[in-house]
Length: 184
Image: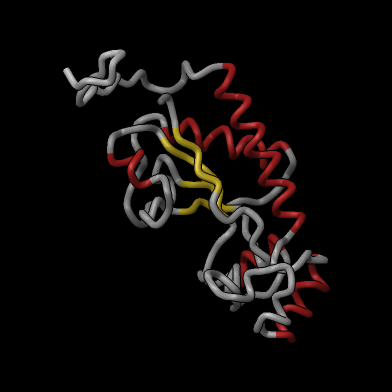
């Protein structure tokens, strides 16, 4: 495994473009990812920078699927549009939306659906978000489109060339099997 890319929550309704902070340039939280994570972050940043789209660093907080990969030293990176965290005034200026509200007001709730208001979401908040972004249910299509494109760009970049990443030693097998299925 040369690298791990994490795309968990890439279309939050009150989004921000979060890129996992592989080099700890933000100086917050858990510190940098394994060697090579900074290079992954740079590729994502180049996607947004070329399109003059703002982006924020987001910490490897340990709350997503990247945890086991980081734990064994595999370079990791990815995108995150927010969960229950609160959008700042600065982020509202950059991305639009509603400051002081969660990036994803329905995070892990029944209203995380294509019919959020019918499923219990705050109708006034969703009216504001829908006016700002033209949501599809609880999905911000603008954020999803750009994050999907950034994911594809980054996957294609590393599918062609991983030379900027460290070479990792292959893990030693715990046990092997004979063609008959008996453990050796």
